[in-house]
Image (cartoon, rainbow, N blue to C red; front, top):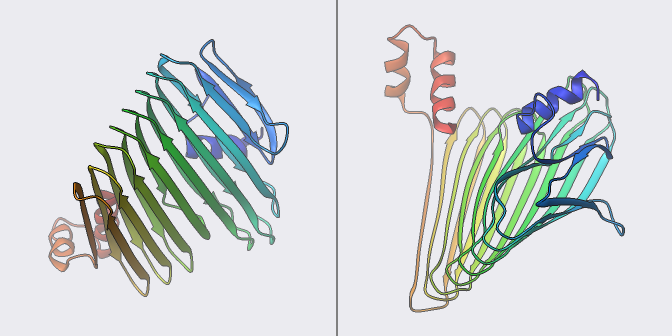
Length: 305
C-alpha cells in the first residue's frame, strides 16, 4: 500500500503498523493483508465479495481489525461480511472505511455486516468512516449492520463519522433474545451540502432484553441529517433511544424516534433534542481569548467527544 492508503487505515482503524491478532485489510476492492489466530479464522466467501469471521467459543481478550480503504476515483466496492461469535467469547472488532478521492467520479463503499452472537458472548464493535481528497468526485458510504444476539449476549457498537463523507445511509437492524443487551453510540458531523441518514430498528424479543441507542450529531452549513430510531418491545424488556443534535448555519436536522410496546412489561423511553450552540457558552469561551470560530470548534469537539 502507498502512503495515502496507509494514512486512511490510520484514520479509520488507528493502525500505524501491522496489528496484533487477526486482521483483514481490503484496499481498492482487493485483499491487501490477512492474519488469523488459533481462535479466530477469516475466510474469503466463494459466492460473493466478502469474508466470514469465525471466533471460537471461550475466546477472550482478542481483537480483529477489518479496515477498508479506497484511493481510486470512480471505484464502487461492495462487501458482505458475516461474524460468527462463539459462546462465552469476548472480542473487540475494529472496522471502518476511508475514501481518498482526488478525481471527478464518485467513489463508493457499501457493506453489509451480519453478526451472529452466541449465548453469553460479548462484542465491542468500532466502526469509523472518513473521507478526504480535493477532487470533485463524491465520497459515499452506505453501511448496513444486522445483529442477532442470543441469550445473555452483549454487543456495544461505536459508530463515528466526522469528516469528508458526502452522502451516507446507515441502516442497523437488531434482534435480541432472553437477557441480551445492545448498546449503540453514534457520532456524526456533516458540513457543506453533505447528507446523512441513520435508521435504527431493534426488536426486543427476549425476556429481560435491553437496548440503549444514543446518537450525537452536528450539522453545519447546508448539510442535512435524518435520524430514525425504532424500538419494538415484544417481551418484558427495557429500551431507550436518544438523539442530541447541534444545528448551525443553514443546516437541517430531523429526529424521528418511534416506540412500539407489544407486551405489558415493555418499558420504553425516547428523547430528542435539537438546538443551536448557546450564546452564553460562546461568550464564556471568548472571554478566555478564543475567537468565535475557535469557541464554536471547542464546543463541537466537546459535544462529540
